[in-house]
Image 1: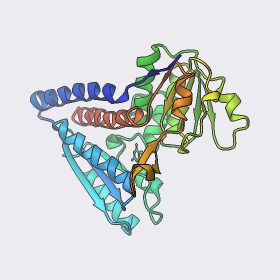
Image 2: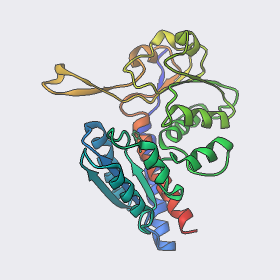
Image 3: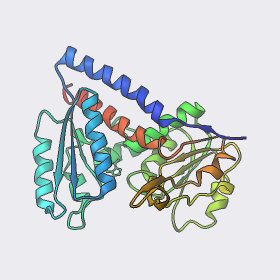
Length: 291
Ligand code: GUN
């Protein structure tokens, strides 16, 4: 039986509608306009597309948007100085430095300099610690988007076995924390995991976040399982014309969709949710900063 397609694009549109309403109320009742600053260093084409989308949607929500595009050879000191300036700016409630950054810049130093009150990515040690011990705080955008789609698809997640493939600080680790908080049984798999296909076959929920196109095959999926594909891999597509590319997830979609109970497509699955959750997090930090 064909899987239900989890429509992240339409879910994110609904979420943006609620965010826009919230922004109207914040402005009218409290005189607050939530402000998001996005910083990109260098010219990675994929990152530039994401950052442009983030800035565009911020404006569409009626929020204040600032975009800083810094050259590839920007020094670490200059990025740190910009982050400190944004920390002190009362018009800015969320700061996002797009990762990855060029090699002369230590991403951990940048993250550690962002004021945790403006940490809409949930990357700072303070935010990560709060998530781990269950204190209220921000939740990282992609994991939060995945969780919303899972809850919408499955309802109560408690007792389900979730296999998270990928152990990055951006996605794998925080989604594992979130699913644990939902009382899932969570296994984190990675490049050194043995018998990965057999492990994935035990999963009620598969989270694919490895960054390798179509690595997870259809015959790894337990019939009826829910598959969330976080991968956004841009590959050359000469069949579409010279220089053209297309996006592939970490899951072999066609194969998996024949076995799974529900699956997110790429594009149109997790990607739109990540940006919507960033906007939601900015509204939250703006509300909290102003008490
Ligand atoms: N690069 C890829 N995804 C993200 C994200 O969610 N936040 C930041 N800051 N950089 C990213």
